[in-house]
Length: 81
Image (cartoon, rainbow, N blue to C red):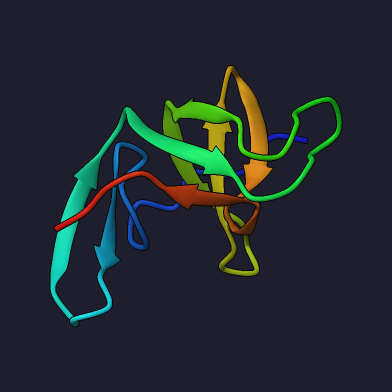
């Protein structure tokens, strides 16, 4: 399945993230994530690089990692600000 590119929602090269203090930052691809659970053959706590981001027609954020699509909720973003 190939997801459509919907430019009015997001850029395929960046997302906006908000930290626990309410500060917002634009995060550009590639950026690091760590899996928070086992995802198929990917073990929990595995560090990976997000190459691109897409959004589904149901407004669900999807990460492109090694050319494959993964639901964003399977990962934690590796950044602090």
